[in-house]
Length: 408
Image (tube, rainbow, N blue to C red; front, side, top):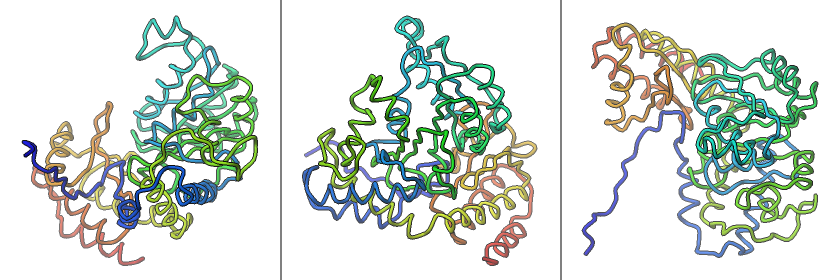
């Protein structure tokens, strides 16, 4: 008999920046899949249909559009793999996660000597990091100025920065990259499946990467969507990349994309899970059934209601993402953010603080698009604040929120 009891993980309200609340249909698809090898015709059929749905989700005709097995970081590592040592790069940072993107970029661009000098946080001479203060967005003017001055080969930024809850100017980024002949890379971890946009509208962005646990909502460990324009693939063909695991061309071969053509024989690259393929496939079906425009509109609507409620509690909201509210606590509660979040998480109400300074609170609504869910989030957050000494009339705030939500 094992000395370890069975693991029991309770249901929680995942009301943070992600992972989000996985749809029961996705969990059912995962659990009901038969045991099949990774090259079984049904598994390959699922991958073919998934890449076609991904192209629709991204709004692209890019041939090299597929999923990288793993988390969002797996997709991002694939996206920045074309960057080689001494490549000139401008990296825009305005929060925790674009900051981590920056570390990955600097590791790729560092020479052997620069990497050895500081292997976990290299400072290569060829990479310029533009730090935008926390709580502010990367604007087109900021991008234009930096690219005009530094004239890099690559530029990268997050579309929506989850660390600070800020939307960055993707049109301005594209236009500046186009003007200066720069190849753009975009971290769309927080925007794909939530915002209503088509990546083909931004031709100077050559590489996009997202994740499975936010807008796609397909369990944290299935597939991270990526999309490469042909120009980026040509760079990879000409110069190569220093990775096997996340090699864009080798990854694409397993999805039946090879030699610039689709529908090719699926080549072996990794052992794909039939369970992961089934879950990813179902999550994409759900997303497309909902409709990009409808889903984006719902995020805007429910976010606005929750924002009004927390502002009525005295909080100052500094974010502008429709799936995430980042806020400062009022009055005497300032400085107690971690305590309040800890109290909430102890009650299986999963909100988060920011992961870097300044410490703020993040409340997300991923896959919580409904009157009951938003009311529950607002009520639990209000109770947590009141229990720590805040003063406001909860009943009035909840009545106003319910009235707003009932207007839909």
